[in-house]
Amino acid sequence: MREEDLLISLAQIVGQSGVLSGDVEKQPYLEDWWGRNRGSALGVIRPKSTSEVASVVALCQQHGVAMYPQGGNTSVCGGAVPPAESTGIVVNLARMDAIIDLNPRDNSITVQAGCILGRLQEAAHSADRLFPLGLGAEGSCQIGGNISTNAGGTAVLRYGNMRDLVLGLEVVLPDGRIWNGLRTLRKNNSGYDLKNVFIGAEGTLGIVTAASLKLFPRPPNAITALVAIPELEEALTIGLDLGGIFSAELTALELISQTEMILVAKHIPGTCCPIASESNWYLLVELASFSSCEILADRLGEYVGPKLSSGIARDAIFAMSGAQRQSLWRIRHSVTEANKKEGMGLSHDIAVPIFEVATFVRRSGEAIGRAYPRAQIVVVGHVGDGNLHYIVMFDHANWDSLADKEGTRHAVGHIVYDIAVELGGTFSAEHGIGALHLPEMQRYKNPVELDLMMQFKRLLDPANLMNPGRVLP
Ligand code: FAD
Ligand code: LAC
Ligand code: ZN
Image 1 (spheres, rainbow, N blue to C red):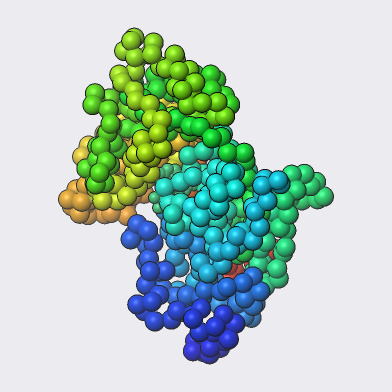
Image 2: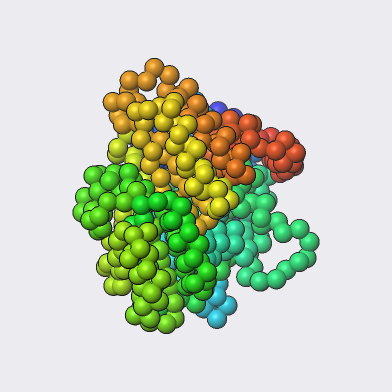
């Protein structure tokens, strides 16, 4: 089929307003959040319903056209934009953003895949419920993207990652059939649990069009604390203690290096580290509860007080009001923006067993220091899950002066990932594979696992038209 004819047929399905084919109108959908990956596509198709998605997919399948599902385009591993030179189509879900049903008595919500995460959180809040997934991109990422990347974020240690929050899915399969698995049951052992095949599949096995998700009773009170702790081992011990003392209340345990604090204050207007005393590490702690903030603060104070007087912790602030808490979270959620402004941050989304975090940081720091003495180490992450974003930062001048940028990226990755994997960890904890981590899939993934994944792919998408060139090497 000629390209013009394909665009006409697509417009017959989704309407002319659902087809973007001019260079200028396509551009925002072809470049990723970092500005590091740019692709091309015949068109960006914006369906309004599941049946439109199914017809688009069937048409593309019939004519051998590659499809690139796209949500909010906040992927940090080049997963959401097509490759350069592609003549496929982007299937963008933004116009499918309805909240289909919210049932507080069932603690469930059913939404179309294009619903923005922040909007879903607000809808749950208005019904006095909590949807716990939270991350820096929540104002623009979509539920379909969160499901397809099995997103993590800052509340995993209490509520699990996206996989743990999904009750049912609706998916358009690569052959154009619709699988309606939308249900809100908590128990259903009637055969294979198919939804889990699509969660974290990064759009390679089908297009998620709707989802039923868990809601939770919303703890009305929360406090957020920032604790400055010079030694990483001590910070980890404090984190572990807090997990025990506040087993029912701890909802976030985030680690921020001093280098990261400095970059946020430097690049994000209106932010500064609220603790004056210098410290190599900071723990951001959130406790949420049905008992009062004062009780939470007293209990936290009882634990932190002795740490301060012994000098293990250098300083601490407790934020009780909404505004104070927001300003602490603003620091945390601005890290990626700040790092982007600073230079070329080679970010490694590793996880290791929690007891190996300090060893990982020490060994990686030594190895990178030897190989790249001018690079700066910046660390931020969900330390309660053993997941760190370990960033090797080259400022602009330093990066521009490097002759072999791709080679440097890979060499740095090998150093960091080899150490994580040796310690029993992973090279991708929560961001996924996208196009960026295909070499790591080859290098680190167990061959049997890789083979099974390829078999799934061949079973569901034998013509390799659904997000080709992502996830599988
Ligand atoms: P996109 O980026 O559009 O797509 C991501 C992948 O999912 C692509 O492979 C795409 O093809 C596929 N996809 C999207 N929608 C569908 C669909 N409906 N059906 C099938 N496939 C689909 N991630 C975390 O896990 N934790 C964090 O804390 C976190 N913080 C972030 C902070 C910032 C500032 C930024 C920019 C990103 C962050 N991310 C984080 C990464 C990213 O936001 C998440 O991976 C998010 O889940 C992606 O959602 P999206 O809608 O933007 O998906
Ligand atoms: C974060 C993203 C980068 O945790 O995953 O800020
Ligand atoms: Zn993260």
